[in-house]
Length: 242
Image (cartoon, rainbow, N blue to C red):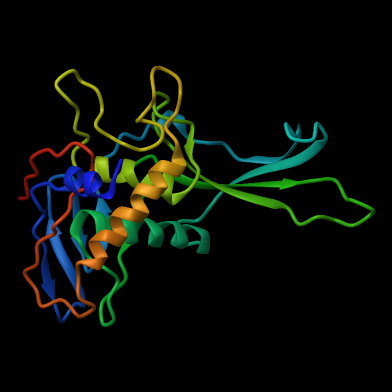
């Protein structure tokens, strides 16, 4: 798929945002989300309360890569933790640009996901491998976003994996005439029944689309009353503010 194809497919009726100089950011209230000073609050969710991860204090498991026993712990991260903030800043960057055509700008708050959708929680898995030559190895840490329906995935493993799904939630979880999801995240955009989409392609499209949008913008402070020029999904649907 070419960049021109991506830009054509991303185009959709824009969400109109207002800019408040005194409060250093954009504002807008819509059906499934709201924006407050570049903070993105997602009010829609497909999360499942019964799909929450459970903390493990330090189970011994077999590494599929080496066949050796490793100690694995799973801990829930505080919402205000450094890891959570990094995830939410990254998601805010993608959403701010692709859905609203906005960049992080001096004199404004950075674009930030202010909440995870209901029933979504962030966890860290720490894996401690056995010592090598009597030297302890630093535990490996992998961060996961849990809470998605079983029909989607057990967990999202990076902001890039979740970005498209978050934008689909903000757009009202649109589906086509046959009831198939229009979400284009790795897990929803399957090739056939079981084969997952390619995350390298999804991430590459996110990056290319964001760069293309930013190339068309001057580096300046916002003057207010702007409208986004790009949408979020591969299948445009009508958007309605309130």
